[in-house]
Length: 296
Ligand code: GRG
Image 1 (cartoon, rainbow, N blue to C red):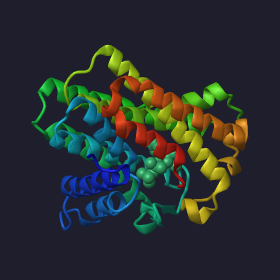
Image 2 (cartoon, rainbow, N blue to C red):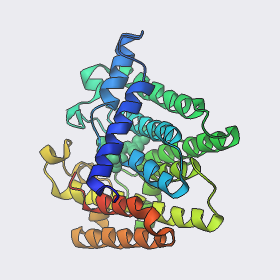
Image 3 (cartoon, rainbow, N blue to C red):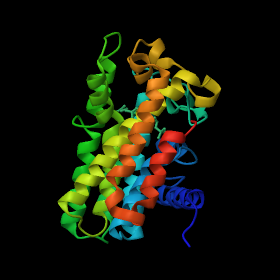
Image 4 (cartoon, helix red, strand yellow):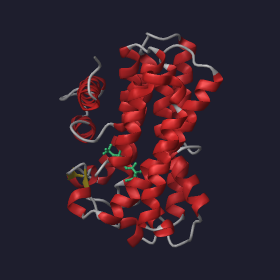
């Protein structure tokens, strides 16, 4: 009998924690402050949604664990770098992240900038160093992560978000921004997990893509609902910050009830998209549920 979702999730989270600990610069390595700050911000926190997606998609293609560890660690490093930079005074100016002081608060701004830069570089080092998959496959994985992180993905979405303060985006524009800002990396996580194993058909890749788009949007809709309804202690950040900054959100455009209904619809879309994979997609289905039901 296979493990419950909760047991599976905890075991992947523990596995990824260990892999990240090994792939990051080791404690005591020079330059001490930079390396300590990289470990401080990456280890011991976060839901690890992106690594969970990598491992769950790896189930579909029989991917080997060593490759999944590298892909999951690389995508989490990119995610953590984006959080460190996003928290800086020039962007969101947050003092808490994952329940701890943000890097620029605990260390200083220059260190936060370098931590993000170094984590980004480390992600690609980790992804390109393994030898368990053929070089061409490895290059494809590097390309997927690079595209999802750059101006055609996460950075591009962040730029649109920064430019959207005080202007009214319509639903379509909001969706586009989130598809880039958070959706691109979630989607890359699924593709990386799939690429780590045997080839999928074009039809199967399209099904995975439809799943990724749905969970990427659901993630953001739920984030906006949580932001609008939770207090700052629950979120570890300033509740309602986007609305207060006059940034458009799903809740500001659709209202709470319709936003919740949209999240449910997206969860159903995600489930439907991966039906053809049957039980092999069980973990992907459960992650869609986790994303929609999460409380933080
Ligand atoms: C600075 C290049 C650059 C990009 C920033 C993703 C992003 C782009 C900023 C994060 C800002 C933010 C709080 C967005 C809301 C959705 C989101 C990505 C939340 C944080 O991700 P979780 O919930 O965090 O997966 P944990 O801590 O669980 O990993």
